[in-house]
Image (cartoon, rainbow, N blue to C red; front, top):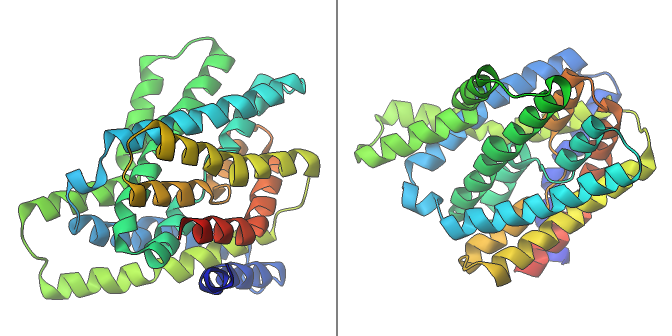
Length: 307
C-alpha cells in the first residue's frame, strides 16, 4: 500500500497546498471561484477533448458497465435517503444527503488522477461514470426537488435540464472530441499543442482549487457528515464492486476503474446545488471537507486493492 500512497500523495499535497493558501487568505474566495471557472470551462475541457479525440464511442460506452454503476449507485442512494427519513429529516434535506452519498469528485479529481495512476485507458470508464452522474443523478435531484416543491414536473423543467446537460462543458468537450476522432483527421499541429498545453493546466489548477474551496468551509453536524462520508468512501465503492465484479459482465480493468471512481470524495458541485436550492448547504459542505480529508487513505487503499 505504501507505494500507492506515495503515488497518490502528490495529488492530495496539491489539494493541501490550496487549502493552506485559502486558509491563510493568500488566495481569496473570489480568486478561487475564478480559478475554478478557468478549470471548468477551459483547462479541463481541453484535457477531455484531447482524451476523447483518441477514443471511439465503442471504447467508452458499455451497457453492462452502465447497468452495474447505475444499479449500485441507486442502491446506495436509496439507502442514504431512507436513513435520512428514518432520522425524521425533511424530504429535501434527505434528497441532498442521498446525492451527497453517491456523487464523487470525478471531474476535477478523478479524471486527472486516475488517468495518471491507472493509465490512459482509464479515461473512457471515468468519462462514462461522469456521464451517468451528470445525466441521471443530477437530473433526478432537480426533478425530485421540483416535484416536492410544486407537486408536478413540467415540460419546461425537463427542457431546462436538457439544455443544462447540453451546455455542460465537460459533456460538450467529450462529444466534440469523439466526433473529431471519428473523422479520422489529425489536429493541426499548433492546435494540438495548444490543446495539450491548456489541458496540462487542468490537473494542478483543479486540485489547488479543490483545496482552496475547502478552506472556507466550517464543520457542522459532524455526525451526519461522518455517516455521509462513510456512505461515499466505503459503501459506494463496495456496492459498485459487487455489481461490477459479480452481478454484471463488466471488463475487469473497467470494473477496477469504476470502483476507484466510486471511492472518490464528495464533489464540490453538490454544495453549489445545495446552496442554490437553499437545502442543507452546511451539512453538504462538511461532508465534502471530511470525505476529502479521509479519501487520502481510502482512495489509496482501493487502488492498492485493485492492483
